[in-house]
Length: 144
Image 1 (cartoon, one colour):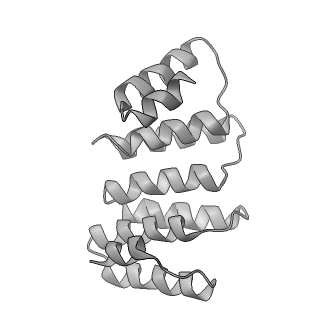
Image 2 (image 1 turned 90 degrees about the vertical axis):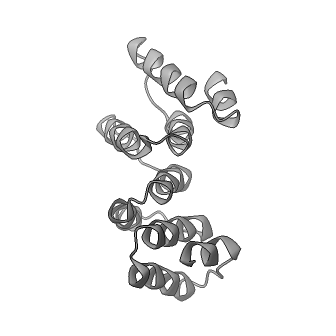
């Protein structure tokens, strides 16, 4: 799809313009569109406000976020130092029965680390280990 091509080419503005046009044309959201748009949000400075609106819209349309959508939203949080939002998303994810993976924890650790919340980043690392997920280089990088 055009949106996925824009995401892969790192054209956040074009991706979000396509999403806006789809809304105007009354095209409903689905998980693939939400995840693609969230991925685009991670590449722009205004990423979190855009991602938050998109998440709200998806939920208002009755979409149940999947692991990929949560991880894309968490990536936005990690890149924009939104550690509080990352923790809320992680809690929401678990409350909705979506099991976190290494990518989830890497994003939470990075968001907390970049936000100056070392204790919370270490707490997320411990949660990860408790779930039997071995931290990779990206998780350790989030602590530095």
